[in-house]
Structures are given as C-alpha cells and as structure tokens.
Image (cartoon, rainbow, N blue to C red; front, side):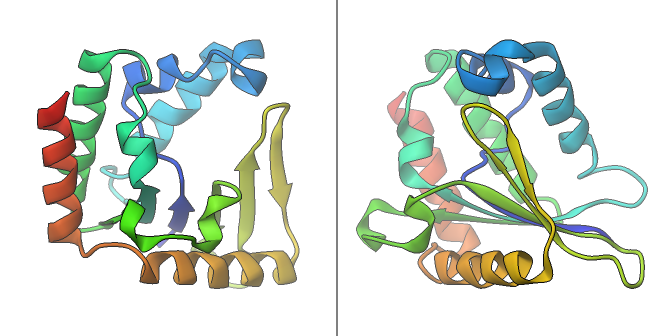
Length: 168
C-alpha cells in the first residue's frame, strides 16, 4: 500500500487548489497544479487507497485564501477526509510553539513495491523539488514524526477545524 506523510498541504478540493495558483510555480501552470491536486485527492478513495498521514499548521487553516466560502468548503473537506480509515489528520496548534515544520512544507511518499525508495517532494515558489536519496527520506520521516508529536489527536484536530470553520 502506498503511503504519504505530509506537512503543510491542506489537501484542498478543486476550488481550494485553484485559489493557490496565484504565485510561483502555480501561476505558470495553474491547470496542471489543480489537476494534480484533484487526482491526488481521488487516490484516497480508489480501489487501492493511499494511506495519508497529514499534519497541518493551525495558521494554514486560518489563512483566508480564496475567500470565506472557499475556506469553509476546504475545512469541511478536511473534516470529511478525516473520517476515512486511511487518513490520519493532525493539526499543529499555535500553542505547540516552535517546531521543525515551521521552515517548509514537504511530503514523504512511500511506494508499495518491494525495494522502492521513499521520496520527498516540496513545492517551492519556482518549482517542485524532489529529493530521492535514502538519507533525505530518513531525515524528512524523522522531521515529520517530530512535527506529529506536536499535533493534536484526531478528535481534537477535527474540533479545532470545526471551530475555525464556524468563525468564518
């Protein structure tokens, strides 16, 4: 089974992904960006679903991107996704203070094929950066685990997302 650990990617529905196409890589290829995000979301519910463990900083949930209605939809999408058995969602609250995820968002993808290497990818303002060494994957897996230790439990994460959604 393929697994992805991600910090900083909210897992947007189509409108949320489209609202992020205003700068950097996304501005140059907005349709490709949105298409990739939507396809990735589909992997959570296909016949061989992706296991997703995601940690999202509270600031990302509160940053108004795309307008209030887009944000409400995005937050509801996160709550719905958290109900899937293959999704583990954690919010890293402001009260967690400084943590290793504050420098950049990233994802570690582990493939189901025997002997396949984990890869790390990060979206930057100019491109998507792929790190394919075992050392990079190990460092980012460790970094993710340290971030996740600062995250709220699933129930508490969903409660916080619901409170933020109601504030909008």
